[in-house]
Amino acid sequence: MPRFLRPARLSPLFRRILPLAFAALLGFGLGAGPARADTAADLAMARLAMARHDYAEALPKLTALAQQGDAGAMVELAKAYGQGLGVTVDKDKALAYLRQAADRGNAQAQVGLAVLYDQGSNGLPKDPAEAARLYKLAADQGNARGQVSLGWHYEHGSGVPQDVAEAVRLYTLGARQGDPAGLTNLGWMYQNGTGVQANLTEAARLYKQAASQGFVRAQGQMGAIYLAGVGVAKDPVEAARWNMMAAERGWAPAQFALGFQYRQGEGVPRDDAKALQWLRKAADGGEQGAINLLAQMYESGDGAPKDLAEAKRLRALLPADRRPGTTAQ
Image (cartoon, rainbow, N blue to C red):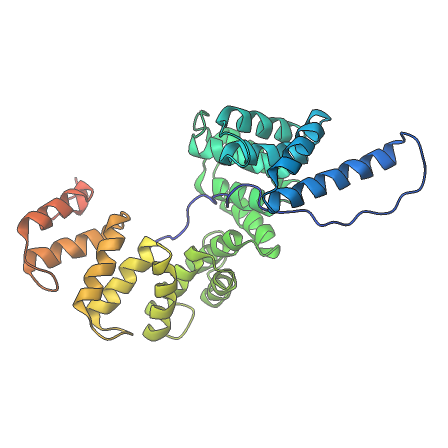
């Protein structure tokens, strides 16, 4: 069964708006307590203005707060300059604000900067060790995304020594906070007995909890386990339901599985046209199983018009060791 998870990607950076909850403070003058409360109130109001797209009100407040050293305001400005919210897109400014916020200990910024190092994007080199360092700073503050992403680095030995027990510990911390990537990663560990004793029932429970949040990779895993009967009773109809959810959102492994189900008439009525449609989508997404199956279909004319040129083109997309006639050296 294919692994449906990669390093945890950040959702569009910085969506959360902090709640408006501030204690009433007595006193006059320029004491530290009232000043901090005023700053927090200003930041909260600026975030609300950003949420309603009132950039003319929000951006001057955020700029003033950032100049006072407020890391939360720097995060919002990084988002604004990165996405062109009320300002011209300026990746350099976005990165500068993000780095300043991270240096001031803002966990959200530390995770955002780590993602850029993981991807090698926005002018930063691909640097798994630096990404892991930043994820750890956020994880140590209890940030779920930092915990889960650092766990992935430990699981795969990316930028840190491989340590699957530490990966499980970090995934568990993230999962306890309801993080869907943490739940899905931890489910994978239980499914495969990696760092923990295999427990297929627990794996299925974790996948379902993540899938119920709309996490597409977990929805794909639900389709896979129902199709195979792993940790749950085999149920091709339920598998097709989950695969359809994930496939419609562009998840290539689920598109492949759904196409296969339509081709076999398993859990859905057999439909060669729908099978071809979903298999092509999966192949366009780079799913090797779909590419290989499509090549066979075009080569044989079974389920697709016979087209040897298309079969050859598709096979050329596969790694050399997966092409017909090749042997392992």
